Every structure is written in C-alpha cells, then in structure tokens.
Amino acid sequence: MYDTTDTIAAIATPLGESGIGVIRISGSHAYAVGDAIFRSPSGKPLAQRRDRSIQHGLVVADDGRPVDEVLMLIMKGPHSYTAEDVLEIQCHGGRKALEEILSLVLAHGARLANPGEFTQRAFVNGRIDLAQAEAVMDVIQAKSRQGLTSAVNQLEGRLSKVIGAMRHELTDFITRLEVTIDYPEEDLEDITVPDVAGAIRKQLASLDEMLEASHDGRIIRDGVMAAIAGTPNAGKSSLLNRLLQEDRAIVTDVPGTTRDVLEEWISLKGVPVCLVDTAGIRETDDTVEKIGVTKAKAYMDKADIILVVIDSSRPLSEEDRAILENTKERNVLIVLNKSDLTPVVAEKDLGQYGHPVLSLSAGTGEGLEALKEQLLSLALSHADTAGSALLTNTRHIELVRQSREALKRALDSIEAGMPVDCAVVDLREAWDLLGSITGDTVHDDMVEEIFSRFCLGK
Ligand SMILES: Nc1nc2c(c(=O)[nH]1)N(C=O)[C@@H](CNc1ccc(C(=O)N[C@@H](CCC(=O)O)C(=O)O)cc1)CN2
Ligand SMILES: Nc1nc2c(ncn2[C@@H]2O[C@H](COP(=O)(O)OP(=O)(O)OP(=O)(O)O)[C@@H](O)[C@H]2O)c(=O)[nH]1
Ligand SMILES: [Mg+2]
Image (cartoon, rainbow, N blue to C red):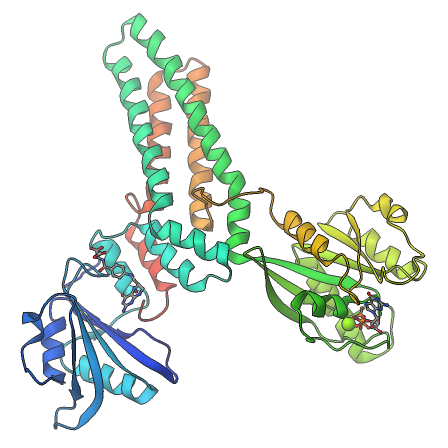
C-alpha cells in the first residue's frame, strides 16, 4: 500500500533559463523544511502564516550564504493540490538556483518525489479520482485546443460523473434482480426482469456510443498522421508549405527534390494533424533518393490518412497508377494539384479508385479550404464531440469495451431465461470494470504503473 508519511519535494518547472522556477514540497514536514532554509523580515514560522499567503525572503545555505531571493507560497492541507500541507518555493528560473534549493530541501528532511507522486497523493488522499489524475498528464501533453478542452473536462470530472452514474444504475439493476432471487414469487420476477433487461439495453447503447466516439477521442488527444505522397514533381512539398503557411520544404522544378521525410504539426479546427512530406516515388538508381523512396513508403504504411498528390497538368503516369493501386484499401484523399494550369487529368478519371478526389492549386492556394475540410472529415468520424464525456485514453477504452461485453452477457442470459444469478455475476463484473476507470476498483500495481509515466514534479 502506498505510504504518505514522507514529505516529498521536486522541481516542478523545466530545468533551463526561465522567468521563475518552482520547487514543490508536500507533506506534514513541508513548513519545517521551509523554515530551516528561509529567512524573511518578520521571521514568523511558515506554519503560523495565513493559508494561501505568499512570503518574500531569502533562501540561505546552512552557513548563512544567500542562495536566492524567493517567494514562499503556503497552501495548507487539505485544501491544496495534494490535499497535504504544500509549500512552493518560487525562485529565479535558473538551473543552479533550482538545484541548490532542492538539495537544501532534501538535506532538511524531504525526500525526492517520484514521477507523478504529487498527483498520486491527490488521488490517494481522495481529492481526485484516477481518471482525473490521468487527465493531468493529458493537459500537459495536449497538442491542440480540442485536446486541451477534453483533457480539462476530464480533469474537472466530466468522465468520472458519467461512469459514476452508470455504476449507480448497475447497482440498481443488481438490487432489483436480487429481490427476485430472495423472494422467488412468480409475479415479482415477471415484472422486474423484463424491466431490468430494458434498462440494460439502454446502458449498452450508451456504452456503444461512448466507444464509437472514442475513435475521435483518441485523435483529438493524439492527432492523426497524414502522409503527403505521390510521384516526383507533383507538388507535395508545395502543398506542405501551403498548409503550414511557411517555406518549410525545398521546392524546385527538379524531380526528386525531397529526399528525407519532413514531419510538421498543424491544427485543423483544434485537431492536431501531423503532416509528412515524403520523397517522390519512382524507380531510381540514385542511392540517396532510393532510401528516400523506401522511407516514403514506410510512412505511407503507418499514416492514418494518405494524400496522394497528382500533377493534373500532365497525363497520369504508370507510377501514379501504381501508387493509387497500392493504396486502394487505405484512407486516401486524391489531390489533383496545379488546378491553375490547363487540366489533362480530371476528377472523373479517378473514380475507379473509390476515393474522394479534390482539385486544388498548391501554387495559388485555390481549394485549400476544401482540402482542410476533407482532411478533417477523413480524420474524425463524428461531427461534434464537444460537450460529451469523451474517452481518449486506451486504458479507459479497453475497460469500457470489457464492461460492455459483461453487460451483453448479462442481457443474453436474461433473454435466454437463465437463472437471474448468472446475470448478476456479469453485472457485478461490469460494475467492477467501470470502477477501474475512476480507480474505485483497481490494483495498486496498476496505480503505480499509471503514475510512473508522469513527469517529475507533477
Ligand atoms: N503554483 C501552482 N500552479 C499550478 C498548480 C500548482 O500545484 N501550483 N497546479 C497543479 O500542479 C495546477 C492547478 N491545480 C490545482 C488543483 C487544486 C488545488 C487546490 O488547492 N485544491 C483545493 C482547494 C480548492 C479551491 O480552493 O478552489 C481542494 O481541491 O480542496 C490547487 C491547484 C496548475 N497551476
Ligand atoms: N503551376 C503550378 N505549379 C506548381 C504547383 N504546385 C507545385 N508546383 C511546381 O511544381 C514543381 C514541383 O513542386 P514540389 O513541391 O517541389 O514537388 P514535389 O512533389 O515535392 O517534388 P519531389 O520532392 O521532387 O518529389 C515546382 O516547380 C513547383 O513550383 C501548382 O499548384 N501550380
Ligand atoms: Mg518535395
């Protein structure tokens, strides 16, 4: 069992040069540790100062040497991040100041916190549940507006509330079924069981909906990879530059200009998209270009979406056709580039591949908005995910999937007229599985595993 008797400390800001740096201390000795290294005009012990006040003073070494001028922020438990006594030392954001203050703190009775240990304490002390704790890292790692919004919603307990309501309902189903076990009069069972079956069906539908939207949840959190592929000179790098609104990749009229793979993130309506510019695909004897082509193919394999770029001012080449043949089963958007020139290839010539086709000009920017729209609709399957309790975390998705299975088994056994006890076992399992999301029913080693992936000082 995790033990909270130690007072823990860590640097909470990046080690570099910044305006200020923060050292966080949490636990019953936080203020004693602070008093040992802090000198202020009033000299009043930190524990006697007002909750949520800030004191100005100096951190001094044991020999009286000044280490840094700081602000001490006092947040007394249980109304703090960890729900314990917290002291934050806000010093100058320099590596040396942070490191010296941390070692003084450690020398005076605190121990170095493990990654995620502050948040782990907030969980263990019951201030937040596990889904909320996991959201903390999602907030830190958010790459886009929508990713940030869904993480903050989860942090504020939106997902936990939905899961809690479902578990509450499951308890109700179980109680109602158990009544028919305890009092097995015919009429009681006839009324109750079909009623519960209907309610289970409803909950199954909600879980299905959550699972369906979770595809988008993952994308909003982690983003999609869109590979820009095609034959040399089609205008792939020009398209990348246009989407980025900067001259990122080299563009020339020499076929085979791009050799390496270029990855750049953009945000489309708050959804992160990783654009990958690749080398034009063709047979070549050039050693470097060959490696580029191999890399291009590897990225096409792992991309979520492939933008196959075609120069519409020239007849379709064998190589263009080969790329389209090889990507028939993939999530592809065919881009007919150079629409500002006289077209030789038209959208209807590409109907046989069964992919959406879009004409645009990377040169002039015409058709770019339509491309962004298309890209977004290929990436997301739901139009609107705002406002829902979105599943974004693979652990949560897997638990919802498993609890859906258990619920389905319960329903099947009821419908097959099996003894009600069987359904109760499955409903209990569904209840347990959902409880692992919020951490009500979860193994300690699972909790350790989750927090170990956090960053230091969080
Ligand atoms: N300086 C500083 N900034 C920070 C944090 C921090 O710990 N320190 N946070 C984290 O790293 C985030 C803020 N998160 C926090 C969450 C809860 C409480 C807290 O004291 N909660 C109490 C009181 C609630 C209230 O008064 O509103 C509670 O829930 O009981 C503090 C910070 C972001 N900014
Ligand atoms: N007229 C016109 N020219 C374009 C357009 N897009 C790209 N080009 C030109 O086509 C040539 C090739 O463009 P790139 O973007 O380098 O093509 P690429 O597909 O990256 O080529 P590789 O890196 O060699 O595979 C350059 O001369 C561009 O200026 C367009 O929309 N219209
Ligand atoms: Mg290129």
